[in-house]
Length: 434
Ligand code: UGA
Image (cartoon, rainbow, N blue to C red; front, side, top):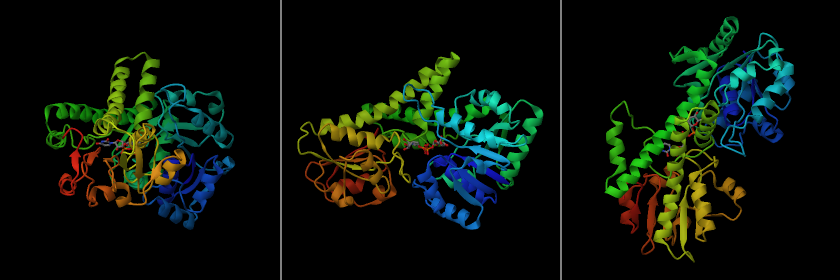
């Protein structure tokens, strides 16, 4: 099928490449010329395992191309919208500027039998509002909402072998039928593998996505709240998570206590959820998401407080920060707890030396004053405190060098091998298992 993908950021670039790998003829469209130029040479401007290879495969096969020219969307049967919906600068709600402008740029090239498929994470009610816009209705095209659940670092597998496909369909039966048929054809290879399919209406599809992220965030903040009790009571939150996680009603995933969640999705999605709930006059979600957000931010503060407690004299004290990205296998620094802690300690006057396998250069572009270590030994040499803030395998499996007298490692992700650090003379502090 001929497909256009509007927005070639994380979601769009991965989706375009993945759809081409399923055999479709795909054009990716974005307003950012530099991004398009890079994609056309087979390189994404983000680190995502396997993405460059998939792009190169698609470009070579002739099934994939990228452009800034929206008229290239003409003739495609399906148009995916995968632009960002970041947090508004003036509040907690989602900024739909990119979404509105993507749709407006696409309108002149839509035909009556086209299906526009929203993938961006949006506040509930957005699809209904967009589908009712006069300018959209004038095209005769159909709108569907098909949320995306990909995780950074696993984006390709999550796109081509998703846990489920969710279709949010319009109320009109003929339009709903068309949208479903088009998506079934696009995802035929995925559906053949018995991937569960949930066919529903717009608001449910929109809410599925938002509530999935809100639940994941809640799970993390829950275990971090329990970690605070474990710390106070002398219990071990990792063993506790292992034990409760064996109950399959609870599950072990997303129960890792630590410096908390970040990234381009969970933080802004819980805030947008809260803002939308307020507009709808629903209060409990506001309270719940506020608490989840507060616990999450508290985790960062708690690491900073521990450093200050260990090193009350700031002058000449070296803090090694291991990890800057918001999670391993990603170079994404958006709302990264690690970067936040590193820059705040640096602002407080500590001599912060950071290291990250992929995100170091990007972090330095954002914070030119941030000092990067040449390597693992350099980062840890003479450190008074070492902080593990992103659990890259390189860090969790590396042998630590001999500690300076009195040095402490704070394992902000509960991922280090405690014994090997103790053996090298480091005092060890985890989160919820001190
Ligand atoms: C998240 C969701 O997991 C995806 O399903 C969703 O599609 C995506 O957002 C999105 O909305 O686009 P992602 O932002 O890639 O994916 O990151 P996650 O793997 O969810 O991790 C988020 C944060 O939680 C990271 O900072 C991670 O370190 C932290 N985390 C995760 C914990 O602190 N503890 C855990 O147990 C798990």
